[in-house]
Amino acid sequence: MLGRFRYRDETFYGNVDGNKVIGKGNVEGKIFELSELTILPPSVPTKIICVGLNYHDHAIEVDMPVPKEPVIFLKPPSAVIGHMDKIVYPRISEQVDFEAELAVVIGKRCKNIKREKAVDVIAGYTCFNDVTARDLQRRDNQWTRAKSFDTFAPVGPFIVPAANIDPENVCIRSRVNGVIKQDSCTSNHIFEVPYLLEFISNIMTLEVGDIIATGTPSGVGPFDPGDVVEIDIEGIGILRNEVV
Image (cartoon, rainbow, N blue to C red; front, side):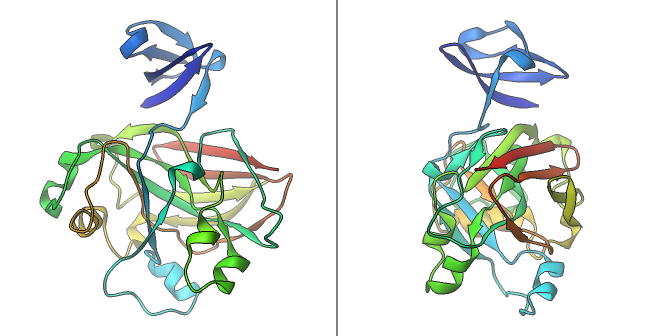
C-alpha cells in the first residue's frame, strides 16, 4: 500500500508494511513507525469526479430507474481531508449524510482511454466518503453546494495498487459510532470501473492524482457532530473521521 505522510516538516510518500512506512522520494529508504506520522490524503487531485446512482441496490432504495449512462458531478480539491481528519458540520445545513464509495486514483495523465486500457492509467484504489448536505441538495436545482463544503471529501487512508484489487468484487461498508449503516458489494455496480474511465476521460483530461468516486450503495443516512464515521472496504482498509 502507498500512503502520503508528514513527519515534522517533511511531506512524502511511503510504502506501508504493517506498522512500518518505508519512505520514498526525499526520504528514500528511511523507515518510520506509522504511529509517529501524520497520515495525509493519499493523493492531491486537481478534481474529484463522483458518480451518482451507480448501485442497483441504491436505485431500488430510492425508487429511481437505472440510468442509461453515468450521472457525474464534481467536488473541489478544497473539500479533501484525510484519515482521522475532522468533518465539519456546516451550520447552514440540518441534515448531512455519509456515502461510502470505492475511489479510483489516477496514475497517468490520460484522455480518451478505452475501457480495455483503463487498468493502465489507474494507480490504485482507496476509500471515499461523499459527504452530502442532503437538505441543501433537495433545495437546489443542482448538487454543487451540497457536495462541496470544506471537509466533504474524506479519502484514504492508503492507496492499494490496482493489481491487488478486483474493483467489481469487494465488500463495502459504512459505520457510524460502530453501527453498520451500509453493507454491500461492488458487484452491485451499474457501471463498472473500466466503463467509467472511458466515459469520463472522453469528457475531460484526467491528471495524476485525480479521484473518481464510483457511487454509493443503499443505506446512506445522516450523522451528527460528535459521531465517528468509518468507510470500510475489503482489501483496502478503514477511513475514519470524526464529525465536529
